[in-house]
Length: 270
Image (cartoon, rainbow, N blue to C red; front, side, top):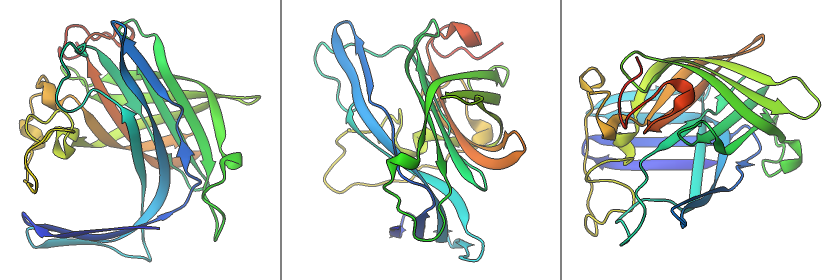
């Protein structure tokens, strides 16, 4: 169980509790070198849960009642990534393609992650299926996690953007049919709002000993070619065979990606 409280600051307050509904998934290690320099060397964990509590923004309170909790996911990463002040002589990352899709169904949770180079070669791919836990079943139980053997996808971009209109993921598993999940994004969250590619509040940047701020992003005003706005998470309807569920599809594509028709640095899909 994880509880998060936010004191009223900049008009935002919250008291939220997440109760785990799946074993915690440690993702495989991400390792990537560019021009002989180690740029990525990190790993992550992902865990699904039910959220209850409330969020208050400018006096408007949204309550998530315990009798009707909201499913969701938490993730955590640690290790080396190109964030913060750039080291002298460090290679600049000019191409990065990333998809990450945690998804909740009634009886199981699926996980999908993939990094490609510009030609579509995977330098990281992983996935897993975890059961939805009942009662007091242990959350540290790697033996109940079915690991993927390979990951692939199809995507249709929204014209003129690098944001998906539809995505289908395929996770190969040992001695079974591939797990195919179809996603229909319905809401978009700009990751700049939590620091990714943010010009001031970017991860690892020093802004002072006790500083904070608030951004308001009007989604209809966002320029899809703005490099700080390429990185998104989309709340999506999900379907896995006869199962219907909900998921988040994180997308960050900067630079070319031949398999999906992306060219240039920030050029949108035709």
